[in-house]
Image 1: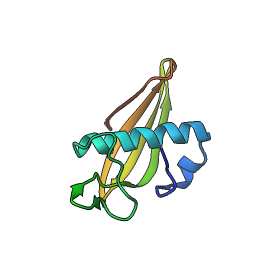
Image 2: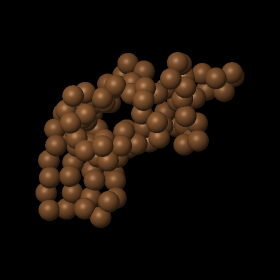
Image 3: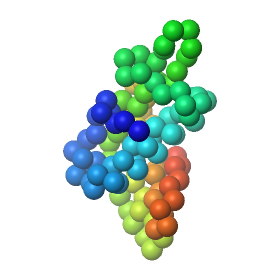
Length: 105
């Protein structure tokens, strides 16, 4: 997925590029699911509406709040801004490479 129009905070930019991409992809997938949109409907950077078909609003910014690691996974607590609405979510990257998203605790 393209992330050129998403503002990443300095802490997120300091992470490994692969970790950044995993977090961005998880945030975008979470935003689509939250808005009940089809995965194939990618929002344009300039709006959220193309023609008469409604598209999900894009992720505007991602801020890394905290990182924790245990023997099974690394958890990135992030703040995601979608159309001006802030949500805190956790992106869990397991040692086997699987990724889960959950509401932040």
